[in-house]
Length: 332
Ligand SMILES: Nc1ncnc2c1ncn2[C@@H]1O[C@H](COP(=O)(O)OP(=O)(O)O)[C@@H](O)[C@H]1O
Ligand code: SF4
Ligand SMILES: [Mg+2]
Image 1 (cartoon, rainbow, N blue to C red):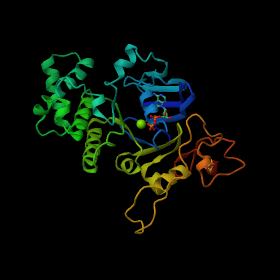
Image 2 (image 1 turned 30 degrees about the vertical axis):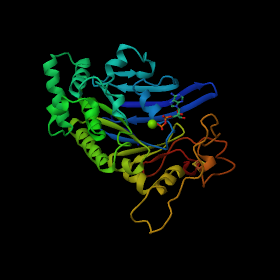
Image 3 (image 1 turned 90 degrees about the vertical axis):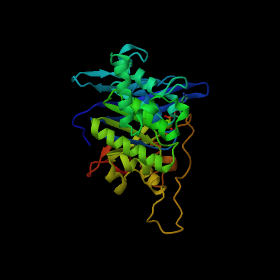
Image 4 (image 1 turned 90 degrees about the horizontal axis):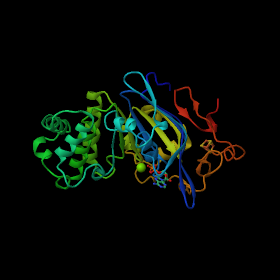
C-alpha cells in the first residue's frame, strides 16, 4: 500500500531495554508510514510494543534505546529530519513536540499538573511554541476548550484537573494537544479508562477535529472494535513487528495473518449464534526475554508450517487486494 505523500516514515525500527535479567526487544523491526491527514490505527495485545513505538516518534524511548532503524519526519517546508539521530533532550526535537507532533495518553493526569488551572496549562502549552501575550494565549486556550465541546469553556478553563470527571479531563487534554494545531496526533489508548458512551464522544470529537484541522492521527489501542470506528488504515503489531497492514474495511472483511484472524475471532459480535463461545487466542504472549525463533507467532499459530515457520521469519508481502502481511502462507 504505497503512501503517496508521507508525513513520517518509520523504517526497520529496533528498540531494546537492557535489563538485569536480559534484553527486551520491545520493538523488533517495525516499518510503516503515516500520510498527512490519515487516521492510522495500531492494534495488538498488551505488551506488544505499541507505546514504545509511538513514544519513540517523539524520542521519548528512554530507558529504552534505539538500536537500529530510521524515523524520518517530512516537514511542511519539504525538508526531512532524521529524528532517530537527534538528541532526545535537544532543542530540535523539543521544538517539534507539541507543535508538529502532539500526544495524548490513557491517563490525562500524566499531562496535567495538579497545581494549576486547566486554562493556565493550555495557555502555557501554546506559549512554548508561539510567542504572544498571556491574554492572547488565554483567549486561544478558551477557544481550544470550546472546540473540545465544553459548553462553558471559560468556566472549565478556571477549574483544576481534579475538579473534572475522567471524560472531561480527557477532552481537556485533547484541547491542549490540539491547541498548537499539530500535523500528527499520537493517541495512545485515550479511551481505555472511560465508559463506552464517553469513549464514543471522544472518538467522535477526534474524528471531527481530524477533519477540520486536516491532521494525521496515529490511534493506538488493544481494542479492534474501537479501531474499526476511527481508523482508515489498521496496522496489527505482534512482538514489536507490524505483521499486517490494510485498509480498515479489508482488514475486517478479509484478514490475512493468522494473528489478525485470531484477534478478530476474539471480539464479541451481534450476529454470533446465542451461546456461541468466543475464540481465545491460544497461549500467551511469550516471555519478553525468550523470543521465539523464526516467525514470532509460530508457537501460537494454528496454521504453522513445522519445517519453515520456527526457522524463518517471514518478510512483508503485498497481497492482490493491497494488504501487507508478514506470513509464509502469503509468499509470492
Ligand atoms: N521502561 C521499561 N523498562 C523495561 N521494559 C519496558 C519498559 N517499557 C516497556 N517495556 C517493555 O517493552 C515491551 C513493549 O511495551 P509497550 O510498548 O508498553 O506495550 P503496549 O503499549 O503494546 O502494551 C513490553 O515487553 C514491556 O515490558
Ligand atoms: S508464518 Fe507460519 S507461524 Fe507465522 S503466522 Fe504465518 S503460518 Fe503462522
Ligand atoms: Mg501501551
